[in-house]
Amino acid sequence: MKQPSAAETTTVDARPLDWVRDITPYQWRVFAVVWLGWILDSTDFGLFSFVLRPALSELLGNQANLAELGRIGGLLSMVGLLGWALGGFVFGIVADYAGRLRTLAISILIFSVFTGLQGFAQTPLQLGIYRFLAGVGAGAEIIVGIPLLAEALSGPHRAKVTGIMMTGGAFGSLLGASVYGLLAPLGWRYVFAAGIAPALLLFLLRRGVAEPESFAAVQARRSRARLAGAGVSDADREFLRFVPMQLFGRKLIFNTIIGLMFCLGTLLSIWTSLIWLPTIQSLMLEKDAINGAEAIAIVSHNMQLWSIGGILGYATFGFIADRIGRRATIAFYNLGTLAVGLYLYFGVDHHALYPYLLPLFGYFVWGVFSGHAIYVPELFPTHVRATALSFCNGTGRIITSFGPLVAGLLVAPFGGNFSKAAGVMTCFALLSLLAVTIGRETRDDALPQ
Image 1: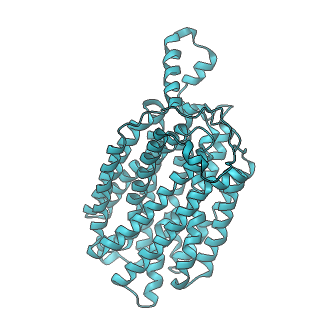
Image 2 (image 1 turned 45 degrees about the vertical axis):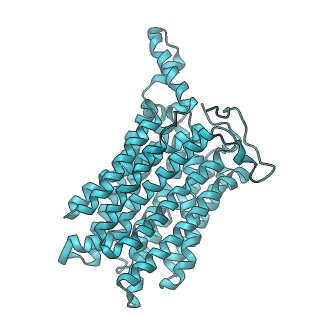
Image 3 (image 1 turned 90 degrees about the vertical axis):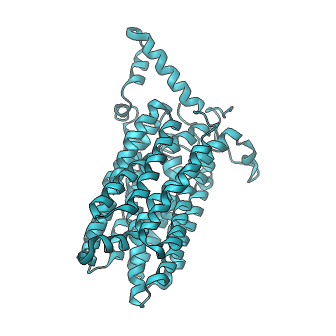
């Protein structure tokens, strides 16, 4: 289980695939656990957006008009993201104290069980409760998985492998679209029921995966510092301080702000699209009298294309970031999100162009999230890394949780136009662009210990 030294510097490979041979079996096992966990997490959490309209139409009954769909759907989306934020906050801190692997297993169990329970909801309130608790587990999984993988891959190939791992988010969306296309004709409840089955695989994959050496070193230092008692050094006293408080100390406050701005901008720009894109397309299809199974097939296909674009965006991020730097890569993805997203929402009023635009939009709006797993961990040392990631993402998610609600509430003043509401929220990619404009470059730095 020998891992590359943190002192290794980032290099440009002589041949494109030479780096693959340098990854150890231990590192590939960690990659598999985190990648599959992210796939299942994204699948389970994303199923909601596919069945939002039919679920609320049934649960609301006679009240299921477009305005009420926007209001209640926005509230339920907000609740899920608040659960995601809380899970990230709590389990990020737990992971910095109790370990990455144990925390990861608990999060998988939570999001799997409560995703399945959403299919048994009898009222919007019940759906919201299950949605919140599923979000708690879903938010924790990737927050814990990213530091685990970053620390296992502390050498020069970290960005490439981590970017490929992040494709799990888009693969999850692709799998969710496939589940929707297969099970939605049977009813929206069957779609949720499918969310519980795959999580069992991860418990098998956890066998033989140990904590990274860098985290084991943190645990050992904490033990030594506590045994020192009154003789503890000032450095170790700061090291033992409650981890969330360390993020606001003199050494880390600037990086904390940069990480928060980056996460907030990217989260706001994608979540409204993730929640409302299926509804936007179904409404467009209705204009051409396309409904029922035919509409389900078209929406499922288009969302699969969106996910395929995201897979390519995630996978190429790390390679681009190793070539031109983290900041320039994040800027490239944000500018692409703005260009394609604003045209999609403000310049297109017919579904015919969606199969061509969605892969391109997915490439940028999904792909920039590889920066969450590559850039943000490089800003913080091991003993606060999971907490820092959970704070930046969690705070961003709390604020972002209002995004789908705001977009839903904007539907009424926009005359029932979900596209314009989603377009407004896409503009928040500018905040992420600002963050990397003033943040520091980390491409040539070793992962902080």
